[in-house]
Picture (tube, rainbow, N blue to C red):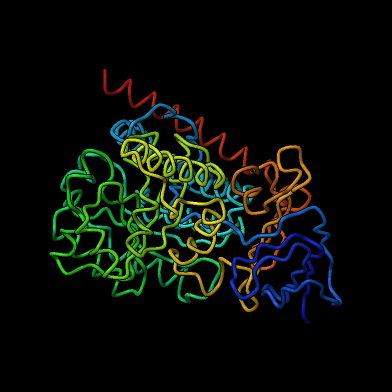
Length: 453
């Protein structure tokens, strides 16, 4: 039996050039798929009234360490160097599978609440074989669309981040692939979150890239971030090893050389930028326009809620403000007019939706309200004091709205938020993540006492 849902009378921003924007439009969903987007649709369906709502594709977060939700806000003033010590060397070794489950469940629900319907979960917390199973369980129970990117353990900063000789365990990656991701057609898919050159010896880098390609899963790696990693020339090293390819996403990219930008573009690689973290923690200027200028389609990501907010509105504004500030300052200094290529509010919405789907390898399924794609849809309340009146619907989303305006969220046609309320057991998720916080703090205190004894 066909299940139909009709989103009626919204201001539709489809992000599909063939459909465009409909100041008053309907979106018909059939069995989790977008069936039609037109000014008016008649159908026997459950009707969701979108009057006063801006209907957009769901946001796509292409890089988040979701497991860190239990330690949200623990490092508000951290630099990147601080983060390695305060989080990866202090909290990460203490994580149990239960902590990972709580973090991924709560973190994924946080995404849905904020209108993020697709997530790349950069999961470098696989301290035991039970950890990845717990992470995947949390994602699955939330109902989000996600790429689970299997990462390394984090039981020792020295062992895993300084010329590491410890590769991600191939046998366990194969087990997870076979057990949870036998098909690539599900709501959850799989990737490999690798540390890459500079952090690992060449033998480990080569082994991890070979493993991902053997299993047919995409690769995601942090590069050119901050003073330390910015010196590694990681992309150039990968090029020298013959490892560059279209299956790899490069995260941050703040200090890529001109040569490395060309290497990424020529290889068909993709880029994820985490603007608020990059500005706040010292990674470097968010390279959104640099990526565009090299023919790439950059996406946005949150990175770590230990230090920054977990919503896409923050990332959009951080990228938009930082890029325009940089260009304005350069043009002022050179006494030149600003170029016509300056980022626009509309371009930012494309980057946060369609580009994100492209980078996550899911553009055939999500990222635009295109008939045939899966129904990942968000409705923004445009009647609230901070969004009304609307002059430019795209600007209302990117520069005016916030999480409080996310009225309705569908993933794969399933309603996860309605009338501004998550349709999930948020009380249980909050209890689990608060219990995890308490357990981690107690373990950290006990570890400190042992170290000083």
